[in-house]
Amino acid sequence: MIDEHEASDFINRNPDIEVLEAFVIDVNGVPRGKWIPRDRALDVLMKGMAIPRSVYALDIWGRDVNAAGLAEGTGDPDGLCFPVPGTLSRVTWLNRPTAQVLLSMKNPDGTGFYSDPRQTLVDVMQRFAKMKLTPVVATELEFYLIDPVRSALDPVRPPNTREGRWHTGQTQVLSISELQDFEHVFHEIATACRAQGVPADTTLRENGPGQYEINLNHVPDALQAADYAVLLKRIVKGVARRHDLDATFMAKPYGTQAGSGMHVHFSILDEDGCNIFVGEDGPAETLMHAVGGLLENMGDSLAVFAPHLNSYRRLRPSEHAPTYASWGFDNRSAAVRVITASKPATRIEHRVAGSDTNPYLVLAMILGAALTGMTEKTKPGGAITGDDHAVSHQPLPTNWDYALQSFARSGFAYATLGPRYRSLYTACKRQELSEFSLRVTDVEYDAYIRTV
Image (cartoon, rainbow, N blue to C red; front, side, top):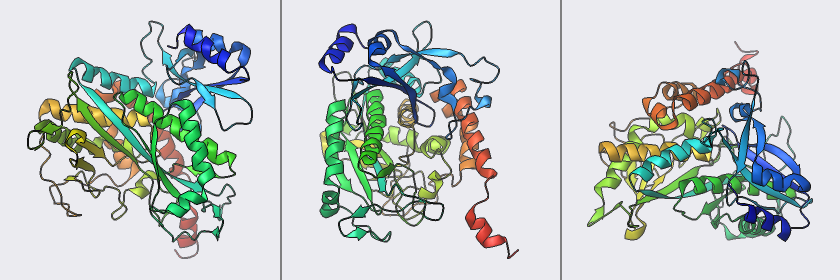
């Protein structure tokens, strides 16, 4: 909850604000909410705002998922949503003076509503708190800047630069000049991050044409880390639109170019603030057990790490995206990269999730798996070197349907997200999968309509 002083102070310090964007995050990580006029903003900030509970269980097209149990047959009742502290800020990329606040739904008794994805992460963090442990988390988000003019025959293409239109075959990884080409965009992204308290760190040019990455600083609050990831995606998309560009966090917008991932770095502190992943002569046994838990539960978690049909195009060999549940020391070919170059900063990098994911669910599954491994003292097996995946490493599911089946019957997903949320998520994804099964692609027409 935001206290009255914080809310009133913000309104008074921003006398030009005309509207408040108040929103929740749905199952797919999509912001959904309302515009509130200034004269009602303080009331919403203090007393909350009603939103249909079914908003949390919409498919990617924004349609009700009746099988999720929140819409049809329920009367579609409202739930009361309250502001998340620290998220009330200005929206810098709109012409109209606008503020924003992230909301989270509560039950009448004040507990979190189960279908709010923030609540799934809250539940996992409570398990850490009972053990007096604190995850320190950061995310790295990759995305593409693309031309806003699209057609069925030309659905995605890189943006213009001073030199003209890029060819999609160019990579120009870590190019400084291509950062400079979009200096105005990245400057405004940095300005918006500062205005909203989002701890953006490094910006870099990635592998694909028009692909970039922004890293967020580590914070000792996994829920806040997920909030920051959600807000950063809004900032990038909003600023890009202001500059006549689009930004996409789609996992694989170009079939022959690099996909976009959301890499998650984390360590864990004990009650004295010491990193429990640090051992006397290298990584601690606790770190190895955490890695073991991540690997053991990775297949069951893939429907969250790769939540869309397009997500599985990214998980291909030689794409800097993992295809096996493997780990290695400072090895970007592995699904789990153990980083020990700086002893105090010893940590795990989880490299499976795409940028198209819901950050709350991703962090819930990652941290839940690590905690399970630590509790059960799960051994991770041998580290890989290079791209050498031994037969002992489990291949990750290569298609959406199989991954969703594994998730739907997973005891780990049941324990981590709860039975109701596992069912809700499965229902939403099955409705989307069903829709795709009805769509015949242009590739199929090209290959078959006259030849078979």
